[in-house]
View 1 (cartoon, one colour):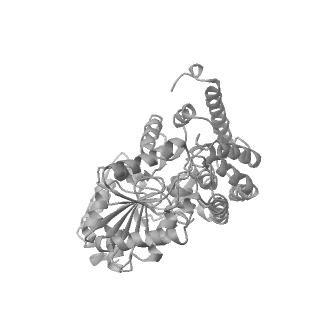
View 2 (view 1 turned 45 degrees about the vertical axis):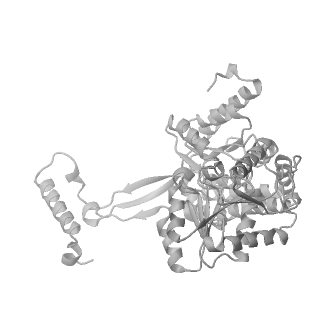
View 3 (view 1 turned 180 degrees about the vertical axis):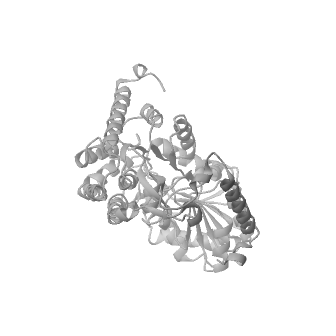
Length: 496
């Protein structure tokens, strides 16, 4: 990281603010490192109310940052969805905080008790992405507060209006020694990753996630990485229906494809490829007529991202790949950065659109001849954040679930696994590590402290020197028992 004196004033001030807030929260955590269940409930309910009170301002900020943003999507995802998650956590946090008992052997440990006590980790950093600037700032914040932590958020520089609003909202609801927001560009982001957090959450691209993990590793900071990847959709035989294709397309267009769990490419039985395309065209001639110029279409976040999307399509066309513009009358609107929706049919695997996460209103469609081929295609790539299957065949559903690996798996629907508050959300491998949402988020941002309380009895004295006759006898008994258990004979001799 550059010396503060070498940076513009705005960057150096933002980094200095981060460092001061970090020290403030560290000191506050030392004073009160275990908030009560009632305090955590109050925090979560206050956060939910703050989000609801700022509904109009949130939608205005989204529209300014994206150029165009559907209000109902803001209400459903960035306002109501966030508030519902907070309130669900508030109703369960006391139960989550209870110690979890663990089994102990009576002969070895007597009446001693073992349990896991979830304690707050301390001060947590959250690097927020631009695609869901409120949801992905505030939903993890709820998990972190439920776990009893203090939090500093760093919104994306691509969403300055949302970042400024987050700072105002949270300053009204919380003291800065508990929750704070710092806004700034790349130098601040780099400084953010180098703080000695007690935990760091990053949501964004795999490429940047790798850099975040490396920076955090310098201070042995544990990280949760919510990344992305190319999430596939498998259509089984007889599942290419108007309803299934329509549902998949509708989910693809949430945030106009700028969603980490959006369908990225579809694997369709070769015999059903023309039918799939026909259903997609019909959906845009009917329910989605005029989509790319209408109020339901979200703008691409920046000119740079818009140009990247266009380059992906241009390369596919140059290579002779069929590109079908689904909203036939749609045109590119530079002012709102809205572009028509396209199908890219059976592109070569070496094209950029097949190598990179799309994150825009384009959908790849690849035909396959049998399920083995479809599964092989998925396995050749990195493990995705999500995998979707449309099938009514239990054997197919079971096989796909067993033979593939992904962060989430959804059958006969897309993205719903990311909306269920009780399901942990996260990736695997290149699509991320760790989980948040609900109880899984509470556990992610807690230290699972193993605790043993000694009771009566047990044979503790044989574990440490001096090792005498009793210790040798206990070692012999333990080895004999282990041999019987390894051979599967223990239950036969002594019962279950």
